[in-house]
Length: 235
Image 1 (tube, rainbow, N blue to C red):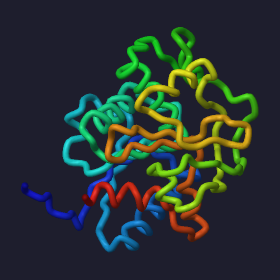
Image 2: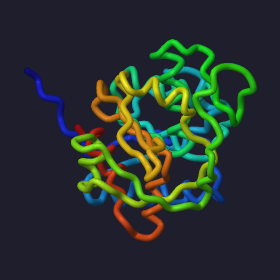
Image 3: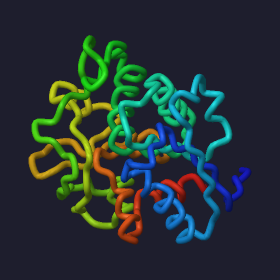
């Protein structure tokens, strides 16, 4: 059997509409650079505005795809195209905050057949799979319990982590029940049992979190999930 060579230079697509004032966007390059240094590889990243993504062809050649915070995206279809491309082609994928929310929408529409799956921030019709949070998580920090023996738990190496948020939307209660038996599994909860992380068990690395773990890089902290994404992309 032929063994794929280990890659020392990776190309990362950062899917989202770059805004220098967004804290997470300031943190993401630092998180990638730090993770690459730890793994002793080179990681080049391109910010792909959602308006630049018109088809799957625009994602070809990337070793990993990160759907970044900063929603609503200017072109939601572009963001969903990127997420679907990563999911269907076993490309390592990370989604945070808005990326988490749209990964849920993409899965509902294209895997579960909820073709009218909708996001309450941008849609007025359809079945809402993303709804306003009961309590805003803008600039909040909270503890998250991780499911044992999952990609996210292995990345952190501990059962409970504390991370920061900047969001007002999460998974609708009605849709949360749909995740109990599918391949997109809930892998992180807050103290109230609300979903804060998911991963696709049929994929080599497909992890999405409502919290913005990348912010740790601004304080000089390692970002375990970014390291795990690059490690998966390296092969």
